[in-house]
Image 1 (cartoon, helix red, strand yellow):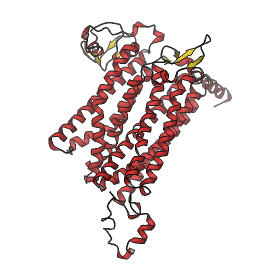
Image 2: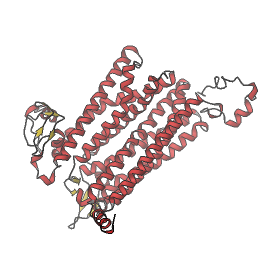
Image 3: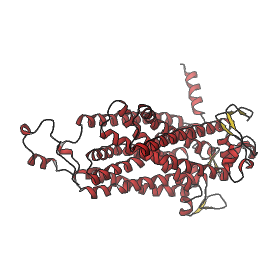
Image 4: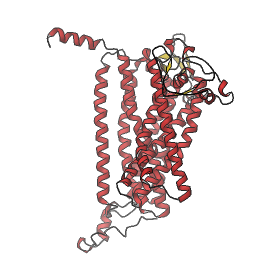
Amino acid sequence: MDLSQTSAVLTALAAVDPVPWARSQMAFTLGFHIILVPLGVSWAAMALIANYRAVKHDDRDALELAQRWSKYMAVTFAVGAVTGTVLSFEFGLLWPRFMGQWGEAFGVPFAFEGLFFFVEAIFVAIYIFGWKRLRPWPHFWTGVPVVLAGALGTISVVAANAWMNAPTGYTLDAQGDVVDVDPVRVIFNDSMPWQAAHMLVAAYLVGGFLVASVYAVAMLRGRRDRYHRLGFTIAFTVAAIAAPVQMGVGDGLARWVYDNQPVKFAAIELVPTTSSDVPETLLGHLDQDGQVQGGIAIPGLASWLSDPSTGRSTVVQGLDSVPPDERPSIRETNIVHLAWDVMVGIGTLLLLLAVWYGVHWLVRRRAPTGRLFLGVAACSGVLAILAMEAGWIVTEVGRQPWIVYEVMRVEDAATGNEGVWVTFLAVAGLYLALGVTTVLVLRAMSRRFRRTAGFVDDDTPYGPTSDAVRRTTPAEDERPGDERHADKEPVP
């Protein structure tokens, strides 16, 4: 490449529009981080369920589950802390004009999230290191703040996103600068209750299915001992309870969008023009002329779901109700509609799987263990993640072109730095390496746990310290070889 060609390439790179790259980087890092959120929120709760059963019923398998899950949880918590910190920096680096104008309001929920994060981190450490240093019930209660702080931290972050969909709690001066902020109104904005409930229930649904899917795979491979059955049952039960709750919460959130963000709702339902008796279009897309093409249309269902009190006569505002520059583009509309179909379709499938599980449990008083059920359950974790990612696509892309709904556009909020594409490539490489490393670490931990096949004497929760073990147990040559921990029971 000669000097003129090099100069042309550099000139082209210098002219790169930073807005798409800023959006892509934020979407990629958020999409990665959000996979860790359900594990941070729900895994602690599932570990406590196992911990409670272990202490209450003197259940050694449950005790082993709780200890191992707490160690897995610590790894995903640490990785989530790293990816969450990167996201925090990205607000200032990628969206400086947004933070410059709205940081005083937008930052309020994040201040609380920071407090909850530190509380969670402290008690995660206490809970893990307390296995051999605390008595059973005091140790159990040190895990409760982990569950509460994780849930409240998630709600705080979602409150910030909800504020972007329903901005309130601020006062502007004549120059458009924020001069007064009402923290209560910022946090408890109109969108916050529905969005927070939707994400919190999703955390238990996704986390439950994801953990259960690992045990389903193990059971399909022949590991059907009580330890694996119990691990599957606890995790899958949590997800099965969350599934019908999530469908109800999701329906309520969709009605809120219909009432308060009609253009987003039009993109969700693929409604180009305002009308009544609007069909529910499954799949399908808008062509370049803005007309619906393909898909399966169910007559009147979109109108009826929007407001059952008026049924098919319910009027649904179309994309044409606002000027073209105040609504998602045709491409963005197609993305939102497809993501909605994916989210609802997978959610329905997971609900049916939960019903299958519940009916089998009611009839036979045990979890189903047939290969067909376990095969579907093995896929449920990945499917749940896809549904969650699709839901966030609906939320974020459906709000376009606004970063703060009907107040500030994305293009007015992004950085003017034309080298954002470099940071995107660097962050993408870093996150991919982090993801691979995390999976390898978790797999290595799993293999090590399987090799030990239970507790060893100096690692028994609530048991004696290793020094005490050495003082009170027989000499090595006097120990039964394969029964060295058979008589070690958890202290009630």
